[in-house]
Amino acid sequence: MERDVTVNGVRLHCVVEGKGPLVLLLHGFPETSHAWRNQIPALATRFQVVAPDLRGYGASDKPKGVAAYGTSVIADDIAALVRAFDAERAHIVGHDWGGGVAWTLAMLRPEAVDRLAVLNCPHPAVMRKALRSNWTQVRKSWYIFAFQLPWLPEWSLSRNGGKAVKNALRRSSKPGTFNDADLDGYARAFSAPGAASGAINYYRAAVRSRPPSAKIKAPTLVIWAEDDFALGIELTRGMDGLFESKPRIEYVPDTSHWVMEERPEVVNRLLLEFLA
Image (cartoon, rainbow, N blue to C red; front, side, top):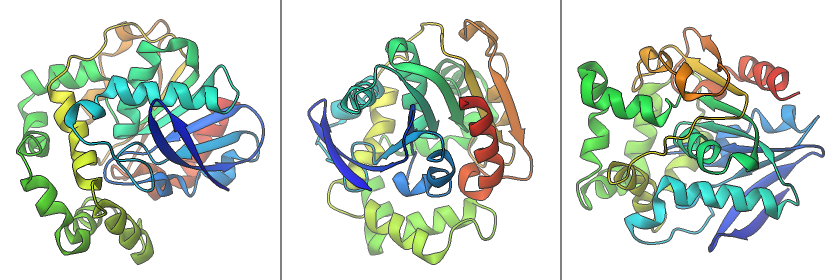
């Protein structure tokens, strides 16, 4: 079922399935809620699953301006989405930028988070430190700095119907991860009016702000695909002091950044174990 929900001043388009405790699935760049197509049916056997297109993406609203895409603003979207589904708390699962929103929500709105699962997205404090001291990671993160330029990133990624998005997804994934329909759908969504600016503004807003520093209270699972092209495995280390209880980290070998699409059976098993 698809449903539009207005929260925090924006309309979010959501895929909704199942009954039970609430689970929110937060996608990353440059995808949409379609990223969770292999997790939604599995999780919906035990939970009410809600997968929104985050603001700026897919069929959701795309407000103008960098300030509208601060991670704390988007975390407020998700806290309000929990309440919109008549829940006080939810299990929060995020990949890539959805993981960044999940980390921020767990720090700023701990009362809204039951359990936290993050896929291939480093804790903001760890990433911030790496971009200052880890030159290997700085080189991998060249695109973050390129995205600070005005208009050029939008033009380069959305021209020719989002061809560059399709090429980037193909190059950075294992063969067979995405079929033509997946790639066409992501490219079409990314090249829609306002979508490229919305997605890229996540990066611009992040560079202009400081991450929150509160310890994470929620029990936390980190799922990390080891062959991530953009994020080094060392970003999973040295996190213990950032949590009230030690996070569980599960490494997935021979897997690219797009872990839930490439290894759905592994991700589904880990999520069902952890969220039960």
